[in-house]
Length: 458
Image 1 (tube, one colour):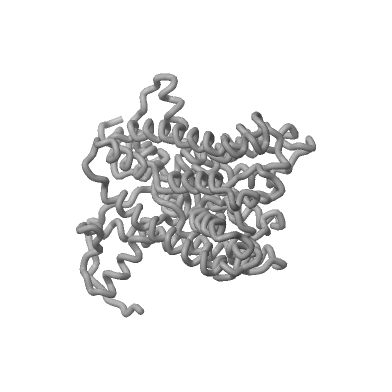
Image 2 (cartoon, rainbow, N blue to C red):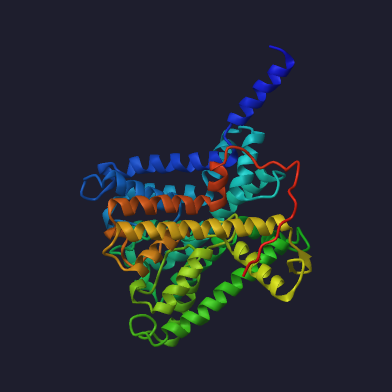
């Protein structure tokens, strides 16, 4: 073989390698499959019978994709073994399987290869691979600390309520589920956290865990380093995430408080302090958390629609949350403002954003809308007996990996469950990751450009 042939063979091998997006897709799929097999075992259910592979696959996908949609009641249907499997899947899904794999490599002293760093860069949505291993260590330590703190705080209520062993397990389970924005609960009977609607400790602790888990590990570490004086100021990304997130939560809180104030089935029967707590909780939970302290099917139509919007937006990049992300929506809003005001650049905090970043945001938004519209269309066909609002709500919840539902999840047909399962998978990995995983090769810079053309828009 001559030198030219050797180079050609090497190039062919390189092309056959899986790109980072494909590795992430296959990795998450493998974890889901293993989880489904374990949950399908008779030992996982209270009555000792198999839940059925489709239901097991649905539950495993919901756990790994940190969604929270369930076809059976988590608290009463599964045994301790089944609940423990679900909890493990939530933790793996929240951190990402690459982060978990890297933590295992740390424990055995294995060196992290360049290829693994590239995959981690894609998984954590980072700009470069510089410091990616150190960031992964920070993520693991931060997660353990925050989830541990959350479990301790929840224990002050759950242990007196349920006893030591059950209370400790409840505290750990709900702390991990909240921080990972999973929304799984084991209170039982499909109540989620509605029995604790007026409890400040439960509400504020869960809100704190959801918020911290949803802003992204990069932001958490950035804020910690600023608080400890290691850096003088936080990054532009952190500022942008905090501003957009605060505006979304504040606006949602005010609107929910107004929309539900006199609703006798939600806020109407609560005192003023409980109304504040419940409105704040529901303003935060659509950011892909999935817990609820108010009965979802009793909400007013404006609140349901507002919840749909927030579920679609989701959390922030590099977090445990899903959706198209806060920064994506923020960039699109800034783009609209720039067009209206006639500005050439898209600006924030005396900085301008790259055109490539804005184009990426538009692509994510477009793919996300396409997925939601397609899923809603197919569900409308497979579930003809269900209300359109319920179907649309379910589709958005699955895509945003939220887990809130208007009560139709267990009523879905086999086809409907499969559609929602695929939607949760797409939602967790992200529209752009899925699109890149399906692409055969990376986009290359064009060697030529066509003459400019013009069309009328708007």
